[in-house]
Image 1: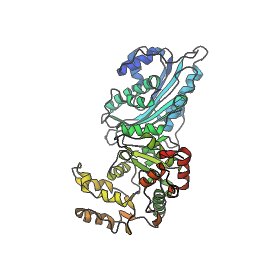
Image 2: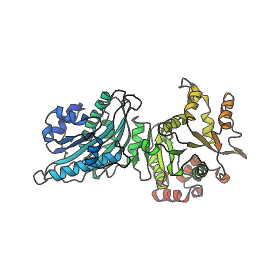
Image 3: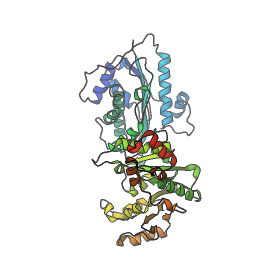
Image 4: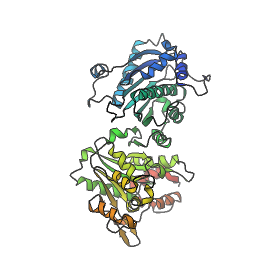
Length: 476
């Protein structure tokens, strides 16, 4: 017999956390294990207190001691335990035990799950606020292959007990969502914050996988995290899977290029290649420990209706991923916020490549009216630690504009001169002058209108992909 959740419509209103746990407990077919490391049995506690847990919970455990945890799940090579690797091992191990110890012949209707989290809450000095990985491996009918949801959370509360409480509620929301909202993953993400202050806990990475989510594009889920204010920055790799920014950026040299990439042009390619060549000659850059990031701001994705054009976003993502790029979507309209974000994870040398027009805007005072310290505060964050700007030139008429002759506001000239003289702003060397007349917005219109010659303005692989997948409105 195959048991399904379809038709269970007795609890359509918004439920309390305890009611959600009770609904799971009252479904006699849901059965699984809770494994929680670091922050106590916060999620399992709700299911015990709701009542009726004996039919739902096979086992709860907390392998708190590292040695004991290693004996169960295996040692971590990097000796870190609050990691995606540890979470994956926990989920796999617990499901395997469940399958081995519960005879399917005697329990043909059981839908198994394993819930796990590995969490570090705030330290005594309150310098490290804490973070954790949380996930569920589950099935929604008894003969189904397992699907999985994994996510990373970051705490913003400064009290350990409050952090544990938020974690417990979000864990219940995740399990409830997995069983009763899995057909709407993008809505499921919003439900994770039921009964939780949005400022209390941040979700900066989430991935859905398995048969239930075959048609889910995790890049859109990344975008939703930023759109919904659940985090300020997300990243996904060339494979389209979401990755944890902190893990990717930690103690790395960074080369970041901001753009619309609509589409990726030969100018973008030249900016990256010439910047990379410059850092290759910089003794402060360890190329083996360097991450290149192509960053798009949320404001750059907004359409005329002040909403995100998702197909346009996916077209850009498709091009960048196909080129093997790591993509970052942020809510940082100002460069100093991006720089400040990077500095949270690394003190290694970081380069941000930008065009002349963008640098001129950086020196416009009006962008910093919301800061009590104004532009000085912003620049303290922009150039903190070991950050430089590589400047790609602009051609206006017959005039080439670079760092030596660009014009900033009169009251900013001394500030600009200071940063330039102190080698915080460097011109990109050996750029391809013949490319300076290429503008992505013009190319985009040419693609839409099927104008001749647009292919020559893009890398060959990019123009080929646009034609094959009919991106950006291309038709022929």
